[in-house]
Amino acid sequence: MTDTAIDTHIHLDDAKRRIKAIFIGSVGNLVEWYDFYAYTAFALYFAPAFFPSTDPVVQQLNAATLFAAGFIVRPLGGWLFGHLADRYGRRVSLTVSVIMMCVGSLIIAVTPTYATIGFAAPVMLGLARIIEGLSLGGEYGASATYLTEVADPNHRGFYSSFQYVTLIGGQLTAILVLLLLQNVFLTHEQLVAWGWRIPFVIGACLAIVAAFMRRHMHETEAFLEASKGPKRTSSLRGLLNYPREVAIVVGLTAGGTAAFYTFTTYMQTFVRQTVGLDDLTTTYVIAASLIFAALLQPLYGALSDRVGRKPLLIFFGIAGTLLTVPILTTLAGTKSPFMAFLLISGAWIFTACYTSINAVVKAELFPTSIRATGIAVPYAVTVSIFGGTAPVIALWFKQQGHEQWFYYYLSGVIFVSLLVYASMRDTKHDSAMHRHD
Image 1 (tube, helix red, strand yellow):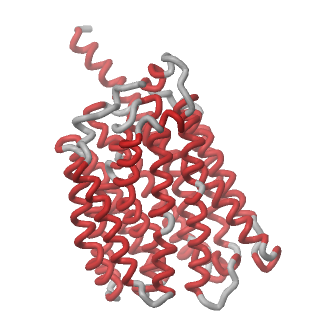
Image 2 (tube, rainbow, N blue to C red; image 1 turned 180 degrees about the vertical axis):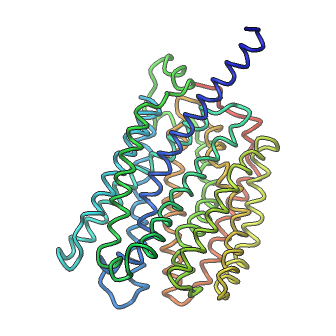
């Protein structure tokens, strides 16, 4: 065999190993986000079982409040699993996090209703959301770190974009389950009575499969090399050495996470209650827009490998600041499902500029020894403040009769992030990926 043939064989083996690692990491990510989003997809059906009220907006507000509770604990999960990932390896952290998600889904699946156990029902639901929030708080940082570290250095943007492909894929899977239950297997009455439990049972089973797959993941070479060095200090203490990078993560995340949760989590409720489409049509519109969003992620990720990360972030900041209010205002006034799809997809054209590359940008800010914690903790804090609260804030404005105020709130948060994008360095050209200290 010639030297050229040997080099080609080695290159192919290396590519196969990277693709396999990214596939396993991504599948687990999809399962975790499916479990988390099943709550949102089925909230319209189980909210009456846990929050008795004659006002559907109040029921959804209560359900959204518990959704936000899952985000409040995400910083704690980010620290816990970030510490695990930086001290004991990315594989250990990712495996434990998906097992915790399984536990949270099982609790929701088996919890009796308010009519059966009274106030204990929403308390149990809240406990499940806290467990899932802890899990997801760690999943983001560990998976972003893992996908970025196993990627080819020249294609980090492309490979890491699959974190949001699978993240959106998790929500799409939840919606697919919803469609099948709505149209094939169950009536509306059955869904309200007990059918909403099925997706959480499915999620728990999928999480078990993902945990088994992650047990056989390869650890990243970056972590193995860094672990040969001297013993490191506490992850949080180490994070104090990077105040500028932490501030950048907070600033670049705020507008992006608010937009992401508006055009995913909140859109289901917005299209149903504000636009006024029926349940089935709403599901189709949201599913179609999410498919479009998923397709954009690797395209923008690959583009960032060519032109840099900063141009995409600035485009998101400018377009999001200028177009959010017109898009949401027009969407609220339309009665056409196709127009609703076009408007939501239009929002994704600029929102995907953030979602596709935010993981790699954060990973490129920190050295190996603190990378998972550096990504997870400030990100989780910011998502708790601006992401998980987006549906609650929107519904509160709606309840007060000023729903359009939320549009301006979202636009303002994106503008604040734009200021950060304009002042930060382009991490593609100035990356800490090769530093281990």
